[in-house]
Length: 240
Image 1 (cartoon, rainbow, N blue to C red):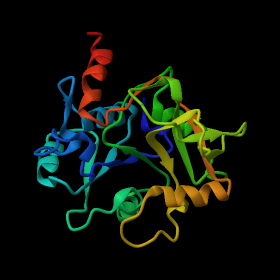
Image 2: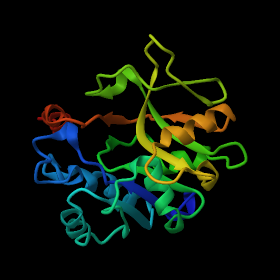
Image 3: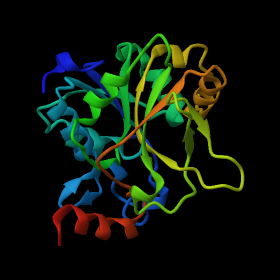
Image 4: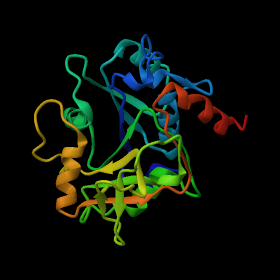
């Protein structure tokens, strides 16, 4: 696959979190470096980006940042740029806002602990094919609730027939889970708050304006948020 098929040649990889749910493994290791099937979590995301032809990854760092930067220096592709949050952890929305000068319009954004297997088409190509900047501030990759491996929550979103996203309704299970992967317009971040804030602030505005959309992942997706999720994920990945 070549970058010409993609809506962007750059992705932001969220890697600055404290990894509290992954304790005790994160006592001395940043969560993105926790190994699953012999491979650091962040390398699953970066390898997918490289295979898709995404040329550049902007990685934000905070907790045990030196260890993460040392690991990233060993990679050949994609090219890595660092968004340094050592002084203040900015959460997901604040992290995107700080990194915006390094990011083209639009850009892919993904969590550093994503593990997924593509369906018939590459994930980043799939997002690109559905991207319409005239209608969308962001396009989320969602997975059907029953197909979210290891996931124990109540779901995140609903989709209308046009692909517009709405939030889970109180007291009900939502049919779709956010995979941590999205394609984002700079428009989503217009007027962003100062300092730390969640991407949910931006999504809520986009939902109100009818500009938050989603597509459904056709491959496999694994929630790897706790140490207990690692072994079942490894068994699925390796067939063991």
